[in-house]
Length: 138
Image 1 (spheres, rainbow, N blue to C red):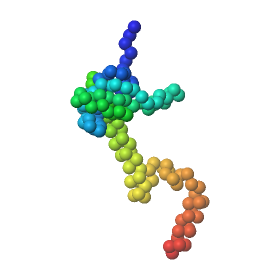
Image 2 (cartoon, rainbow, N blue to C red):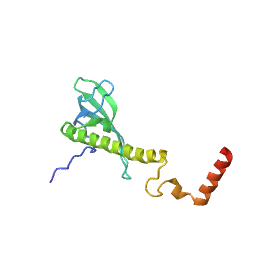
Image 3 (cartoon, rainbow, N blue to C red):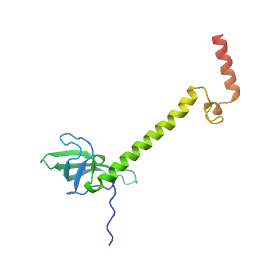
């Protein structure tokens, strides 16, 4: 029987070794521990589960209600770093893509042949609005 492939989002099992991915109460990032108890809610409709763990760390401290996203398997640390960097790059690209049209609109330009808000408003209403602004200002 082939072994089940374990991914980053695969829930941890009781007794499994884990590392913290960020500073937690009394456990700095990279602290090694063992999962002692698993609790939370699992979503049967196919969504993401809300998992929490109780973890006993090497110094003997026990920390409860640790989120799944705050832990990683030691052998998957490199893959976790790659995913975090990829998510950061994607967020930066999305922010840059969102900032480019906003800068274009602020400069008074049209971004791509009527793809702005003017393309969704009838021309007669735009002309009526311009005339009303001219009456108020002039």
